[in-house]
Length: 71
Image 1 (tube, rainbow, N blue to C red):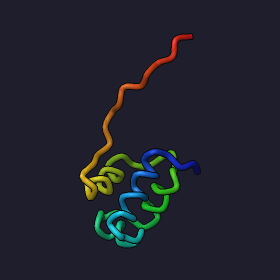
Image 2 (image 1 turned 60 degrees about the vertical axis):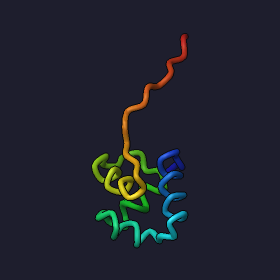
Image 3 (image 1 turned 90 degrees about the vertical axis):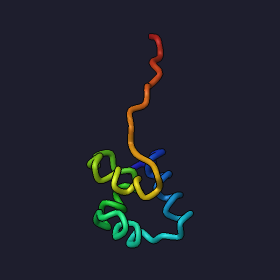
Image 4 (image 1 turned 90 degrees about the horizontal axis):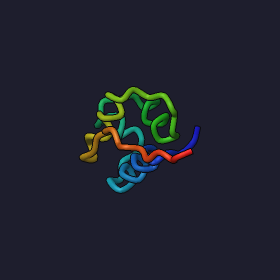
């Protein structure tokens, strides 16, 4: 799995708030395995669960316009 902006953000926020992965899973209501997968950049995760975690940090997933390169 590859580190992504999302995985990096979650890990940085968790450390900023001095939370362990166990703490984060308990406070957000998702499983420890999910937190680990999220922080490791697993490419297939449930958006609703990702938002449960992000809610603790005052964030949420949302669409972002992607720039297209002209070929």
